[in-house]
Length: 87
Image (cartoon, rainbow, N blue to C red; front, side, top):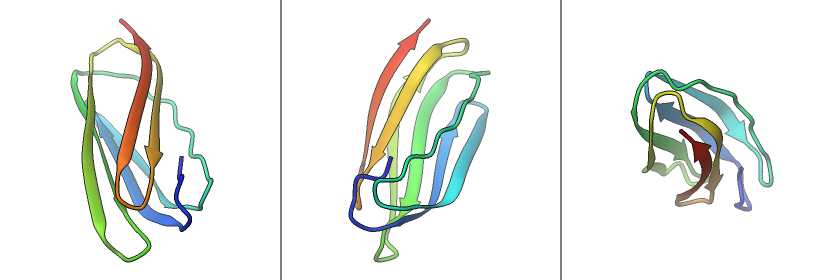
């Protein structure tokens, strides 16, 4: 989710064993993606803000087989992660 007042670009989410992303996310926009964990490790998000500054942030560690929901809320300078995962 983009909670900033400007578009965010080249959003990439890396998670254990794979990654996904989108070219642009408009203000207030939401990008949904379903994935299956086939490994364990941290999630990492990178994106470019409206001033072409690149940002990277590491989130929670995920474990193979976990299921549930992982939300990533982006602003122009950071990412906040919230999770509701079960083993």
